[in-house]
Every structure is written in structure tokens, then in C-alpha cells.
Amino acid sequence: MLVHSCLALQYREKWSSLRSSTTAQEHSLQLWFTRAGDLSKETAQEIKNQFSPSEDRRFLATKSNTKQNEYLVSRALMRHALTQCFPEQKNHWAFIQTPDSVPVIKNLPNNTFLSLTHSDRLICFAIATCQVGIDLEEKKQRKFPELTNEIMNEEELDYFSRLKDNQADFFYRCWCAKEACYKALSKKHQSTTRLKEISIFDLLNENKDWFLLEQELEGYALAVVSQHKLSACPDQFYWLNTAVNDS
Image 1 (tube, one colour):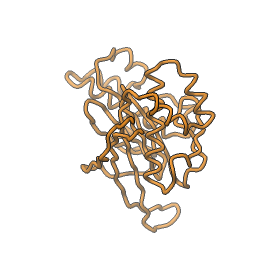
Image 2 (cartoon, one colour):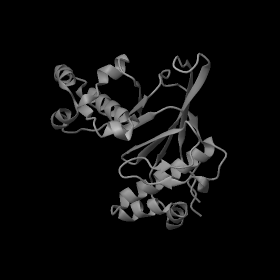
Image 3 (cartoon, rainbow, N blue to C red):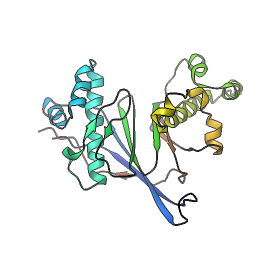
């Protein structure tokens, strides 16, 4: 039996929609975390038993044992989180695996949006009531000059070059924010958008249609970009009292 070691982070904001009505509505976001550890054969099979045909095909096409393990744990986490949020069993959710993105779930409740990210075995899954994108990156030494030219625009490169002590911090903030914003876009807009065209300064200054939240987690940088403005990251963390028990 697999029980997830997860962290659920929740926060809500009341907002008024000027386009539809002036009635206050409540938006919510949940972030669920787990680590992809070693799985017993029994646990792996338990997870695979809930797979859809498209998930089976994606799993079998994945050759790396590490990637297979991350795939199993991420899908288990998603089903666990959805079942905690909505009164349905884990085998209720109709997953359709899509290339290089979070799977489509055909029977999601209305106005439910998902995003998924992982880095070095840490996995984060978001469930929100507005369009959302998340990105998580382990903060480690990289070849920053090469990578900055791929993702940063001229304004960001100029700012990066003038930093002396915090280049790594700015790089990860920039990278995570851009990736999260890209994930929040529709497939149509993703196809015509490059990371260089997404400005972290616009996101920080709220000059565009997307809003950025940032968080540091145990040596990782986390960015959340949402369609509607949310309050700052909360200081309340909800730990699930769980453990791994393969029996």
C-alpha cells in the first residue's frame, strides 16, 4: 500500500469580477508535494493498476528507471490530491496523457485547473480555481552564462550582469517565473510564446494579465503564476500525517 508523504499548502482570496458581476467570489489554490523515493514492485503495480491506456503507453515509452519512478509517484500524487479535494475515489479520474504536459482529466469539476512540476525527485501538483502554472527548480550550480542567453531578454540580462553576489538567486527566480507563466498559458498561446518574451519584471510589477507568487522550499525555488491576483504565500503549512508502508 502506498501512502504519500505530502505537504498541502492552501490559501484563498476574495475578489470582485468587474467583467461579470460585483459579487465577491472565492478563488483557491492547493499545492501538494511529495518525493519520488524507491517503490516496491507491489506499490508500483498498485499505482499502474489505476492507469489509463494513454498513461500505460507513456510509462512503457519511458526507458529511465528514475523517470519511470517519478512518473508513477507523480500520478499517484495527483490522484491522491484530487480525491482529497473532491468526493470521488482514486479510480474515478479519467486521465488522458498528453505529450510533455500535465495530463488532461476529462471528468474534472468545472472551473478546476491543474499544473505539475518536479525537480530532483521533489514533485509539486497544483489544483486551482483559475488558470495556473507552477515551476520548481533545485537551486544548484549551473552554467549560468549559457542558460541566461536562452531565457532572458535584454533588460533581464543587463540586470543579471550588474549583480555581484546574487546572480544565482535572480537566475532561478527568473527561470521559475517564466516557466510557470508559460505553463499557465493556453496551448495556442504556448505555441507562439518564447521564454524570452515573458518578463519577470512585468510579473513582479503586475503589469500584465498574470500574477506571480514565489517561495523558497528546502533548497528549491518555487514559482506560481495565476490568472487572478492572489495574496502573498501563506505562512500556514498543512502536513498530512502519513508514511510509506509497503506490505
